[in-house]
Amino acid sequence: MSPLRAAFLPNRVIDKTTTGLIVVGWVCAALVLWLASPFKTLPTPGEIWRALGELWWQQGMGPEIFSTMRLIAHATLLTVVISLTLSYATVLPFFRPFVEAVCKLRFLGLTGLVFPFMLLTGGGYALKVALLTFGMATFFTTSMAQVVLEIPRGEFDYMRVLGASELRIVWEVVIRGTLDRALDVLRQNVAMGWAMITMVEGISRAEGGIGAMILNENKHFLLAEVYAILFVILLLGLGIDYAIGALTNVLCPYVALRRVKR
Amino acid sequence: MKDEVLLDVSGLRLTLGETLVLDDLSFKVVDRVREDCVTGQVVGLLGASGVGKTRLLRIIAGLDAPDKGTVRGQNGAVLDEGSVGYVFQDYPLLAHRRVRDNLELAGTIRGMTPDAARKRARELLETFRLSDRAEFFPAQLSGGQRQRVAIAQQIMQPRRLLLMDEPFSGLDPAALDAVMHLVVEVANMHELNTVVLVTHDIRAALAVSDTLHILGRESKNGKPVPGARVLWSYDMVERGLAWQPDIQKLPAFVELENEIRARFKDL
Image (cartoon, rainbow over all chains, first blue to last red; front, side):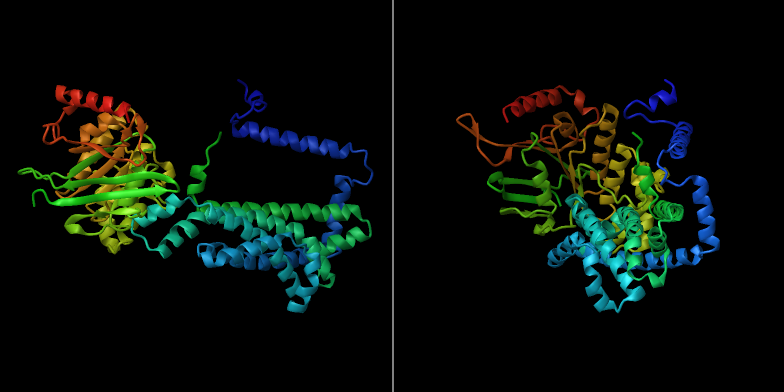
């Protein structure tokens, strides 16, 4: 059977070359659709490219990206520390109701929290870090606490039979044993952080950042610039996503071995 | 010491919710001594699916507490969590550690020095023909290799009692023979070693055990009474059906297998 035909049959495995061809096909289709689009509001690739140059050389996009990256890195670090601590704390029954309550906070919108957080942090950079951390940590904790909750009882029993202390079991089964999934959850949450960045950076535009930049361009209806910024955000997000994936492969090489192509 | 009691399971009763799973379940394992030969014990617990075999093993391993009854080891010692080896049915291993690490961890966890654990792990890897798999992750092992690593891990520590949950399930004839051989090999590593295995494979259980207990529920007026117990025990040594090569070809073995198979149908 031809590899291309297999791509249209359910549950088939296709080789790398065919996959590459399919990807190229999809990209070409997207470009054709874009160029042939009847919507005049959609800027052309050339317009976006020119806008990107202007943003970079005239409007100082580089420092803005750095500012946003710093904010995201700071918030991500805090999120990881807070969320992993809370998730691992669920091994203690005492903390479970508290962690569950933290998870429920994910339903709160960030907008309503600006004022209390402003009072707590005094505004500026600290406010943005706090808001972004709050937004990411509630989701991170929800996912990771679930991962910990779903560890089969058999894994704990197996370690007990070996004579491991409960603390050792927490280290091997709960912390080391779920590291790959923690990195996976991190990947999702960093993406969420990027999705929240416009709103967070919009709170204090004087601090700059790529989110503030997109809001400013949006205000003046400069669509080519807006799409150019979105394009940069997409590239940065993909780069970070790839980096976390590479880190997972280094720290947890056994994960790739478990992955079976269907 | 001849006839020394190595395991004494006495009057176990276990209920799960409203269901009585085990009731007054008792059996003993004694040290069988053979002149000029190191002989461990292999005790088979045969029973239909769902009769409570795994529950019984969990109680012996100290993972679950019975409602009533006791489990004692050599010299009447109470067996607690970690004092008994237990090879689970799905052969769990730490996925993030390599085979060698898995073994060494089992040693150091109970106070073995890293050097001693490394040495013991190397010996066991050789004994179980796994030396070339030492640096593999569990995900890279075949089912049979994984089973061997799981057994090796459990005997890293100097524990005399090893429980095995369904070690013969899902094996092809060649693999089955290899595992049966392995069970006997593990038991015979030390005079006081005891392997207690639960299975529903009558032939394999008969072939490796020196004592065989059949678990089941008694019936009254044609209806099963709740709570499994040891219904029949077979002393394979007394019958001259233990410790012999090609035992499965003996007419007495075949006869006994048929007898047990017939009894099994009524359980």
